[in-house]
Length: 277
Image (tube, rainbow, N blue to C red; front, side):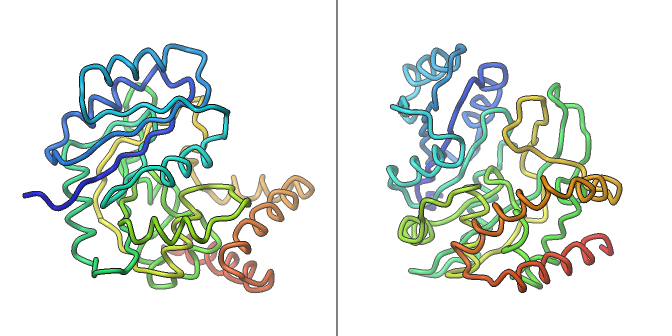
């Protein structure tokens, strides 16, 4: 059953080591109405050769050579701005998707979607090593993120980047709002979209891991195991912590208009509650 066209947006940078595995998992999807749009951000390895080979073999593969290096977040947002579709999914260059990832994501989105309303759904992921050995069967448990906690207290989304872009699917209504809201303060594309979805639309989650989220030394962001000990170590480096916190607050404030008092109050409450769950 055709439920709409899905644009898969993939930004690459020196990703030759794992790129084929990610692409092959997309090709094996049991939902067929999708197109893959790849923008390269200045690779110097064999990434571009790999992309061109697939584009020559598959009509639904599209390659855009970036004219300048934008960085990961802006590269993904460039794709979002320039690609028209019914639905959108971000794709990292080093993961592996379950063969039913698109179908289950889209079906779940359809359950909450109504005409002309921005809608987003995110799923869980299995955290794995670079050779796909399981680190944790749940990204949410690994990072101490409870989606039920987030959606019961949606303002927490304004203080924590709760869903990697590669776990999301969203409709073109949300895409259009994002493009109107976006400004030059872009720290993380996925967090930005979650905040805008919270402000203007509907968010839900799929309580199932639909992909392998690969961790390796060249991850741009990746998953980091959250423990009280690690949080304490970060807190001890006061100068670096304050600089980073100010950067993050300015980013969040530019999209949510949250006061610094409310921001830190929410952040404090979120960290208390995440360790309870």
